[in-house]
Image 1 (cartoon, protein in one colour):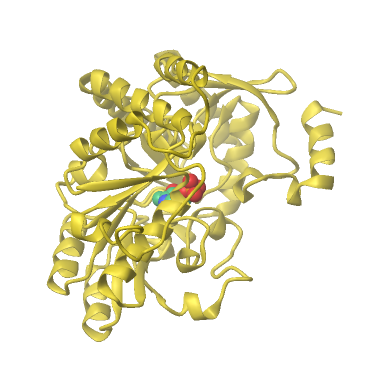
Image 2: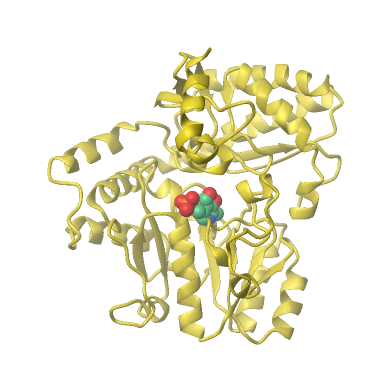
Length: 425
Ligand SMILES: Cc1ncc(COP(=O)(O)O)c(C=O)c1O
């Protein structure tokens, strides 16, 4: 019996489903990780995989990036948690604000879920209104207001509204179709009690779904016209699509922004920021409450500063190289699937891509759901056999990191070729 299987049998006895976050499970059991470095990850049975899960997008600079490790090791010598302010929190917040001009102030939190929960509470506190609008298939974390027609693991496991969540909460979440700004406009025309509109500017939790031309501009204009705060959830796209995130990439200024993942390149940190008048609503100055023991912990802050500085130093090379590698991979996979006559779509942008097994363009939740999930499951299993690790769900995205080498790309294309043949059978 493999070491992973032995561990899974032990895990199932003490951890629900044997895993600590739903998408980590796949049939018959997931591999258990021994270690990771750069672009690769090893399991407890000695198998080595090229990692394209990349911490679900967090590891923009790959595993164990040396600048980040040095900053963290230096911080460890001075302590891990003070629960009192530090100079490095100020430095990090200045770095964030400099790169995201829509944020005049920023508060550090721990996870993306905490950031979006705070963003929504801020929008409600600021407007004194109740309802929020989200887009079908967008995932904003595991809390009640946003676990309505959410993507990611919720879509993967067929959970439209989570049991245990309150109807009183979910009925205040209105859902509109992604890439349909007209629907947003007409909902805002009818509903006068909307506190905020939250969106993933690039939908990376339904596979990968791109905003159509003008969609984000229209969303910005419509929310402005209706005087409703626009929240850009940049937990995935922040620092990944550019140093200034998707808002810089598309030149759009939201009212509130959430960051996470690549902000800490593998360390636990997230942030929520926006205009002064909104952010100053936060307690103790304001009456919108938000708090955390671990917020701004110096280890994660040191990692985030090192991440941003490393990205900044290398940005003229880093982003074009990531974009080129992603384009090469996506085009090669497209050609392979076309040659094999497998109906498919490939969506890609920046350092993210995903294949869907459908002959129709994928532009929202409905079209993404039409993709043949059984084929994706086969693809995932075959890729794993060929030592490529992507997230085990159609409704996740393949993420590149700056640690991927040309050799990794060649091996990945070869593995996709073998794996697509397996999908065909
Ligand atoms: C766009 C987006 N927002 C929020 C979250 C929640 O972040 P976390 O898992 O750190 O709570 C995620 C997680 O995948 C995400 O993709």
